[in-house]
Image 1 (cartoon, rainbow, N blue to C red):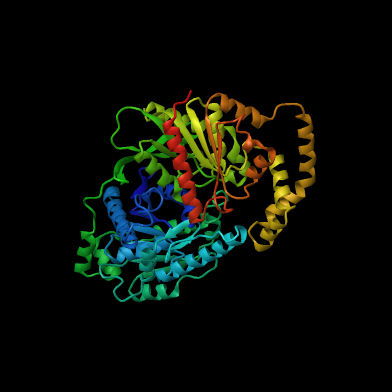
Image 2: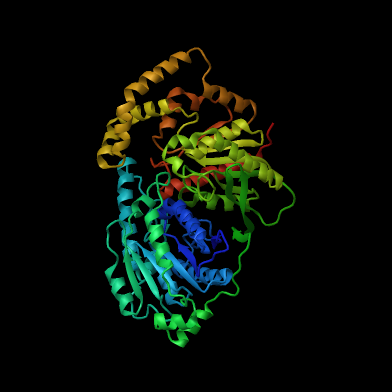
Length: 591
């Protein structure tokens, strides 16, 4: 299990250590940066705070197809709570559970985890409610994908439930559907003393769960949960719910002074001495905090190490996967870059799977967070303006990560890979750094950022095609984006014409870059989903068929029209394409 511990920022330490249990899937991705800020604020106030990724999610070990995920998740929350209690030397642990994370925190407490207080936000009493909601979102998403992709939907195995590119296996979904926090045997070993239940943007709390907790002797308070939607918006637009942070901090500070003692637990929760003994027995003496983790991938042992990379503004963050048995510097390494504002796990956790598979193949692979993304320092709000993802400073940061890998003797030459803006950084990293010998680019939006040209592209694609109007009417494209482009369209067109006239007679910037990369014997692999704007533009210009001029350029097409590869068959096809590209790079010796 992967976790990050935030320690108090001063000598003042609060009684409660805090465990943050994440939501599932796309909500986990979108709310990640907000949860990081929440942990930082709690640490500033004097709390020890542990953020975790559940097994088979995020940076933790395992895959969604592994068996017994529900039991593994509940055990992980209990182990994390026990470790945090021991490591922080605080008298009590409070858990913050969001969505699925709240279900698991309650179930772990019932199993004896040393959790004294729980904050529940958007948490139902029944696991079946969570699965039903996820299934409904998945069906809407699949229907939209089918409308846009001529029947190319999710294509999940029987019994699987998926939405936002993340899946529950049939067994996991069935196990969750059987989870009932209100069942008579739901708290055999213990229950929390206090619970704060938060509404979700005006949607009330689960009254069934509230009544059950109150009847069990738990002190329950209901609070406003305004900002859940803003916290789980698209990653580049998500904003932390600061009012909720403040109200939870106040609630944590209202606990009785002796809240952490065994006697107080018995009095507050109605626990018997046997129950208290069961809770104490769950303290995981064998659980320890390590700076590295070893995993077995396809029968090969690999090692993963978190890395912090110093920058003028603070720290970049990454996780390096490499062979456990190393003999000197490897020949080839890889750096996997953020897909837009998504953290280092990549779209649909693809970078985690790919980095581990490539490390087992003998290729050290770093999945990296750049400034303001994931766990890197910096201002995340800047990315509400998408142009901020296409600034030169981010390419400089990619190169500094390569410097660190070279200093660690991880590899001598490198492949860069990314989706969307990550593809842009990969392209420019190959242009600027002699150590980069290949760039694998999935669905790049552009290769040279020009705000005026981007508006023209969107105008041409978004307002002049009948299929795009259907997407607008169906709600697949935000009307605010369309109206904004339409408002500035006349000026953008005029500016673009002027710019093209000024550039008349000059060599095209992209042609010059492709010529340079060809002369340096650097491989470029473009991987496009159907109807990607840049693919259509390059195809129309004839650049993708110029094999004689640019023999180093290769193209692969993916099924479906989803930019972030949410359909399972799009993900699998992308994995196959990138694995094959890596094998080709391993087999060649650059000039």
